[in-house]
Structures are given as C-alpha cells and as structure tokens.
Length: 96
Image (tube, rainbow, N blue to C red; front, side):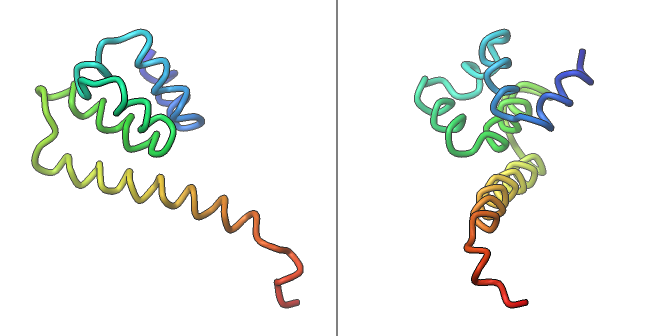
C-alpha cells in the first residue's frame, strides 16, 4: 500500500494530498485550519504533502533536519512552476 501511495505522490502530489486528506486525519492534525491545506493544495502541493507526512511520522511536529526537506520541497514546487513557464516561452525567440 505504501508503494502505491509513493507512486501516486510522485506522479501527482495534489492527488496524493487529496487522498491523504480524505482517508486519514493527518492533514487536519498537521495544519489545524481548513485554509492552509487548501492553499497548499493550490500553490505548494509537494511542500504541503511532505509537511503533513513529516508532522505525523516520528512524533507530532517538524523539527531539526526535517525542515531541510521541507525547504527542498519548496524549491521543488518553485522549480515545477519555473519549468512550466520555460515550456510556454515563445519558440520564435530561440536562436538557431
């Protein structure tokens, strides 16, 4: 079951976050309010999913070296936005 979740998370972190939100109390336990996971789902899905997983495994809270993984997840989210922006650039602007 864990391998299936990792496959879903790798292919679609938004779907993995939604499934985690529906089938476990982890998202509510990690964030508290309804607005934070919703904003995370829209803008930073990899970061939100990793934060929820790290909060609920190994004790309740993200501390120590776990914050480095959360920061790397922020960079992964930003890189996905930058990569999609790079893909939408004007093809005529490229030098041949």
